[in-house]
Length: 185
Image (cartoon, rainbow, N blue to C red):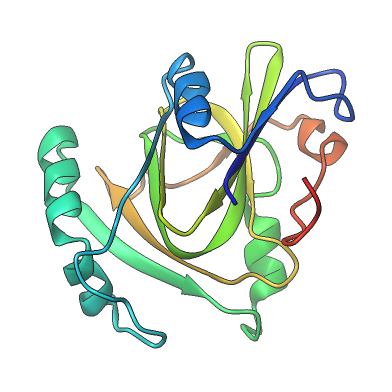
């Protein structure tokens, strides 16, 4: 279940707000310029689907988002728990960073934890199957796919190097909870 928790950036154990209500999540994130919505597949996406089959299932939504935002590239990333490089992949974006373009991801399957640091607040968003999140460029954040990553996501890019992380050097991400799928709300 998708979830948003908001914390003071100095109190990682005391949420100021918590909700699994999709409308409340979208409304709260909208106040900081973050897009959050749900998409439904036009056709079933079966396990083992090719990237072309995944994109075909969401073609209308993809085309609309590309037209609205001028994205130049769209791809599909798939990470499974048996991936031999999973630890390195997880570690890659666990520290606070930002990108020089919007980070837009749609979760076709599985889940991950986006954590945004905006002003003096931390917004922890557990994204699940069907969730689209759009994080504005320059927003400091980190992403955790968990110790046994399992997700398929459609990614949107404006420039080939736009996804490169620019790390802030702070330790804030280490002070907040890591992603453990299945943990209690």
